[in-house]
Image (cartoon, rainbow, N blue to C red; front, side):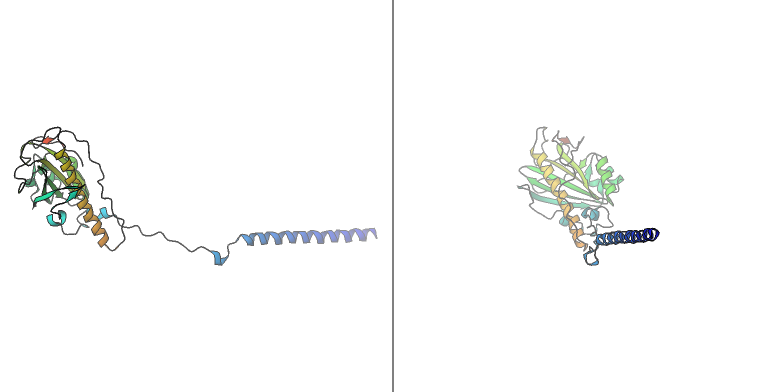
Length: 260
């Protein structure tokens, strides 16, 4: 009898133990199942948008820069207002012979760097005249090279209200580059007098016209990017490098340049 009771108790214990184990397994299974996301709650896949084209890519080489390029497209305004200072355009010119549009060594630099042509325009305001010359190259590397090696100055384009300025006398100079374009200004007095070291009028005029030229080049870049059919963020219309301090005026015989 005792033996039978022990066996019965053992059997009952085994059943209880089994039930507990099975119950534990059931709870674990339920816990794992609860952690699985339901099919209806799965997030939709997302895709990164295609990066818009950089407008500067369209002026970095002649392969992409296909828009018409003339003095009319580059310098379209006869009286541009530059920071509320109104200038009058008095003349424009284009040449494929880059040396003839520069003086004192700059022509050779342009030629050695692969200059294709130079487009110039002259603006006047309050007795000051500024000529800007835009040298066109095959790519950005060539334009950057021309700027880095630049010496001398762009030749002033005289005419109209600027009959004679910056010819063998001290004048303000700037040099810069954007994309496949290097651009230079020479600014002085319309009466042909030398620019003194404390001048501010020719200095400001040179910076104004240099900044205007930069914005015209970037307008060209943005227009071509927009015409490509792909959404693009407009490139900044601020020069990548700010204007440098005033410094001394430079004569065409031994010019020193300030970046604008």
